[in-house]
Amino acid sequence: MTPKQFIEKALEGGYEEGKNWKLISANGYWVTWLNGNDDETTIDFKCYLLDAKIWQAVGKVEGWEGKENCNNCGDPWEEACWCDRNDLHAVPRYKHHMHRMIDALCEGKSIEKFLETL
Image (cartoon, rainbow, N blue to C red; front, side, top):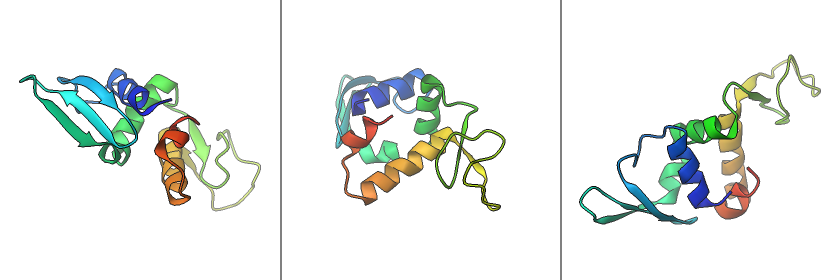
């Protein structure tokens, strides 16, 4: 998905930030809104990426809600995981993808390339 699609899905999933504003554009750097006074407001896209609530809202639209992943290998969590480690626990899928995003950025990948994997 593109940065704009990410924001659109978040709004569709109930993300409150900007719900009364009109989304104009979004890329890997900026999100531009038209506010209630018909003024353009531009916000750094990274502000959204660090907000767990936006990932939860995207997860509602993507079908991640109520699903979990192994915190070690990332595989979908069922009763247990193939990696069979005693210290494992499941994490909500939105959180798994948020952590993957942080890992991708630490590895020097662009946010656009990462979002294409969602």
